[in-house]
Amino acid sequence: MSFLALLEAKRQGLSLHASQIRAVVASFTQGQIPDYQMAAFLMAIYFRGLNTEETTALTLAMRDSGDALNFPKDPRPLVDKHSTGGVGDKVSLPLAPLLACLGFRVPMISGRGLGITGGTLDKLDSIPGFQTQLPAKRIVSIVQEVGCVICGQTDRMVPADKKLYALRDVTGTVPSIPLIVSSILSKKLAENLDALILDVKFGRAAFMQSQADARKLAKAMVALGNRCGVNTRAMLTDMSTPIGRAAGNWLEVKESLACLEPGTGVAPVSNSKKGEAAATPILLDLRQLVLASAAHLLVQTGKASSFKAAHRQAEDCLNSGAPRRKWDEMLVAQGANLDAFRNKLARDHTLSAVVDLKAHRRGFVSKCDARLLGEVIRDLGGGRLTKESVIHHEVGLDQLAKPGDAVRRGDTLARIHAMDRAQAETARRRIQPAFRITDRPPAHSPLIAEVIAR
Ligand code: URA
Image 1 (cartoon, rainbow, N blue to C red):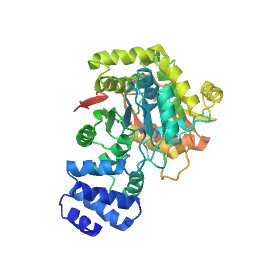
Image 2: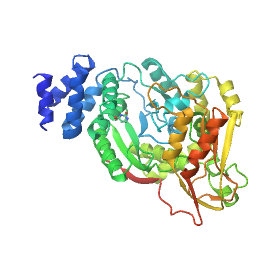
Image 3: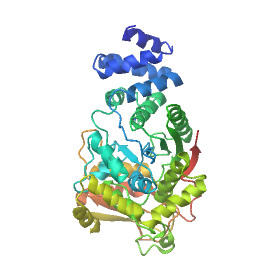
Image 4: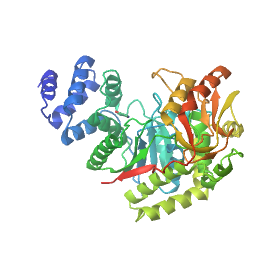
């Protein structure tokens, strides 16, 4: 059957056989299907969808379009986490060493940011000497020796996704659930995982803004992951407010380190004038996501019998300080210069243009809008408007006041790190409406709204 006939069949809403989908993926990856025809095929999928068998076939064909990571037999389960992305989402950084210390192997293949969504690799690029592009052999050997690696996809992994995603990006076909599911899971399946935890975000700064859409995506990914032999669970988490109190690549690395320091879950905010807010745990939401991700993976792999026991195990491990030491081990294995990293960490700020946005009145913070803050960070140079944009790793926001914080007039709501004073002042003006201060604290809304297990 010609590709045109398959394309017409999909346009009519007919189902394709797995062998036909495999042939399409192989031909496209080898350059035998022109982009204009593939673009039409993707649009047909966008409107007609794919059934479960078709989505499974597409995912496996994409996984098989290149090399997978092959690990030796080992009692330590292979696990990973994937987040659909957000503002201040640095969970992967403390999570990888924590999981390694809990007896997992973690081949965390991560991506770069686009738009307001931060990327794990961009954050790591702010660490002096740290290598994110590693050959497959080195990825496997670091995982075997250290227990965790955080790096980019190799050129030979899932090339079909690279080509397909580039085309989807310019043809309006990114927001299709079967295409998203196959894109994300083909890359995770190429890691040869035993278990996967997904953090599917909803809210103003999320890829899927409504909880209902996020649930649809999460259910599809959980079903397909399990169908493909990877124990998969998803958390639906709120992305209306940035995670933690820092957003911006280097500032998030600093905060991740703080999360790994034993006892920081209950440390006071650094703004000594914050009155009642001084008792607010600075990293509660970040720790909550890190610990919940680890706890689910412990249950999914049978290393804990209940979520409660798993959570305690993860918390004890984080509090032991071992994951903090494991972080250094991972950095050294990936080429980082530890002395330069420590010197950089010791500096309060690395840019000279640092200004504060202050509270104009006393009250409670009831809004800290992740979308607006993400847009401002992107425009300061912390994110990409296009794939070619150059990142300034040190720009961003920290000391963020979060919903529920009590503030007095003159307290810091955010500290802006910019490349120059004019950009800092523009950012200060723009982020003002991201915050709202009210007489009463806002109603509590849970960070982890739902868990979707198989
Ligand atoms: N992230 C991916 O890797 N693929 C998609 O299709 C969407 C988000």
